[in-house]
Image 1 (cartoon, one colour):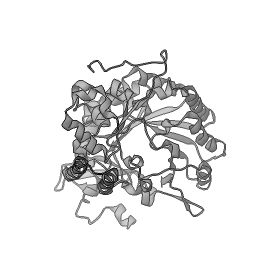
Image 2 (cartoon, helix red, strand yellow):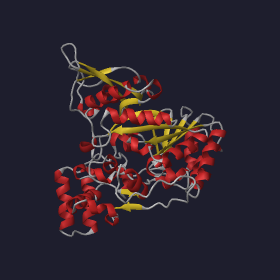
Image 3 (cartoon, helix red, strand yellow):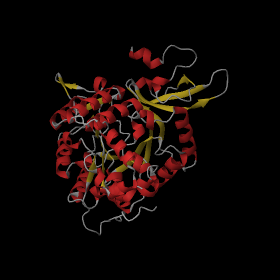
Image 4 (spheres, one colour):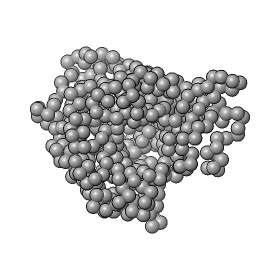
Length: 446
């Protein structure tokens, strides 16, 4: 992979501390690689970057992107704004504001107006998932499935770099009413104590790995010291293994962070690092391999997941390679998600029929130890819906589905059917099979 003279080389544990540098809408033109792009392309990035959050960093730019293949390079598409992420009318509205010299406030108002049309909180996150404690709404928690509580620490509501497809993009655009965040770990512990069905806490964001180890330890210790006998698993969702693996190797507090992981394991809790890998290249640097090895040495497990994304990883070969490399490094393939119906879903979404074909071909070409990955799965309002396959026999072509998780546990693992539709990107674009007016779960939700 040629990356001109901009490639700095991968640093491992035997080298000095690697300095993090972020690139955002304000300074991305400083990148020497921008010389490879036209002014029109750079302006389009600016237009889109005023609506969707944009941040990348020196590791992504220097180690992951193949600049000889830009703009088609999948990691470039994963991290840099693409013109087609905005529908033409939205793009033209924002472009006109910038060209006319509109004020910062006016540009922000136009951006907020566009964002409001992009389903900023899909799957009922804001309306249905936020619990209460003693009559107080806990805006930094989500409790959708009985066993698992999601915790959004206020200090973890950013990332080392932003994925262009991210369904949590509203966390990063500076609109407080669109954000989940929470400071009080005492409330988290008390909520878990009062809900004995909860066995798992997922610390998420943003990315908790942007926090200093000491800050993260404050949240973790509050759980470990609360004698929560029902809590058996702590999960940490992160993209840091892809976008800044030095967090676990050469950052100033990397040893402290790994010690915290070991402390969780030694306490008798299961620690699962929920790692987001969207492309095999993210696994191939020495820095990433070393970081994975160091985490596994603590006794933690690494489970891997990603959406299936047009322009980034929408081929069975990419997924098979990714799962095989993950297993070879000691990770456990977990989920192939369907891109959520938010933000630039029209650009990144893959039709469900095609998604299943990609999954089937990929899972059929790897060994049994890599077949732990479940997919394709939609994290929809009623629950996690897996596409099981298609049936082309008989008078009606069908799409078979089932719940892997659900608001109502009785729905889990009961197959149901939709009419075949090779263009549908999401459950709400499908129609029930056999002429039914609605799916069974819709009747129960009404």
